[in-house]
Amino acid sequence: MSKPLLGCVADDFTGGTDLASMLVKGGMRTVQTIGVPEGTVVDADAIVVALKTRTLPVEDAVRESIDALRWLKQIGCKQFYFKYCSTFDSTPTGNIGPVIDAMMEELGTNFTIACPAFPENGRTVYNGYLFVGDVLLSESGMRNHPLTPMTDSNLLRVLAPQTRKNVGLVDRRVVIRGSEAIRAEFDRCKQGGQQIAIVDAIENDDLYRIDAAVAEFPLLTGGSGLAIGLGENFRRAGMLSASTDAATLQATSGRMVLLSGSCSVATNAQVERWLQEHAGFKIDPLAIHQGEDLVSQTVDWVMQHEEPVLVYASAMPEEVGQVQHQLGVEGAGLLVERTLSTIAVRLHERGFNKFIVAGGETSGAVVKALDVKGLRIGESIAPGVPWTQSIDGTPIALALKSGNFGTVGFFEEAMRQCP
Ligand code: ADP
Image 1: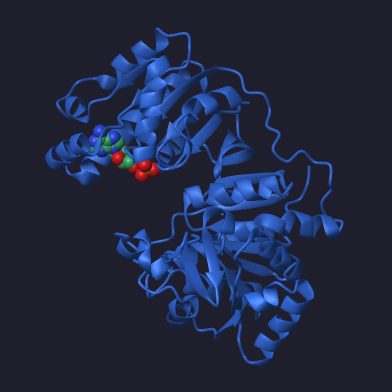
Image 2: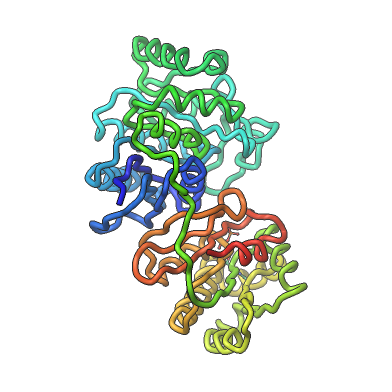
């Protein structure tokens, strides 16, 4: 049984899984909890507490983040990490700045970094400006995000109004010179009265250089990319053994089913590909609304098949539009989420322990319905989408995919790689 070294607070669920996958890749055995667990003892090198605080009112986001941080302190973590989106999703009033301030105060530290860069995924920071692929953040699709539109790419200007701290910059000319130069620049920032440094990174090696410079920091903040070298930091300090196979999950027994409530372009293509060679059952939200018992029908249909099958509500935009027109956007969403998660519970009662789920909200609903409190993170099926296993009770294996992730053959790949 190992004591956790790294304690992370993630501002949304799939972002938490993304970070957890990165930590596993770096050789840290990682468990992601859904919210703050009640007194659970967790055997892992890193814990990621997944919250849903990105767009909450500031006070709620701060309170929930600090509750999570206190729990991570209490279970003995040595270093702490606040994970937000690599596109720095936030509003002018928060929540990234206020949560960083509160976490710094809780940990009694007067310096941290903010580094959303993840070059491998096309998120780079140069002279404090955040790029998405080849374009500035403010020229990317994030400009029109319904909840957190990002119209300024300069992270110093974005963060300054959100925080009571002074924000500085460690630019790429320093980062390229390695960890000693970066540390010296941190000292210069501190002498200049700055408490948060935005740090440039345009390639993965920059992140390793930065990580080597922050090994002693109580608090790190960033996207999932910044976590790339943290396992190495702990190994260098003799706190983590080199031999652990961080992604190993127990073998899971029981049957498998695939559930899809995502209507994203990628998922629709994945559903279509699956149906070319495997069986699927389509759920019609309007039929449920009219009182048809689709849950029982679907469960009976699934039980008639020996091979894994797909149950899906995924549909093309026009069809989704018609459903939403009749039931409302939220009403339609909740109805489908409730139906798919009830099907998951019924199948679980009938011996299904392996679930491949497409859709961020859909995954959240299924995990909640199955009463899963935490997930051990295994091997990645696609970037940011690992196989996971519930930590309490008889293990349930879950592959949770948010909409646009995965290649067209994702469902089949996930099925083949199931622990
Ligand atoms: P993604 O990760 O692709 O955004 P989500 O599960 O987060 O997927 O969101 C998709 C939403 O669309 C869910 O609330 C789901 O219940 C809803 N939905 C799924 N199928 C339909 C449909 N046929 N009509 C209307 N809404 C649907």
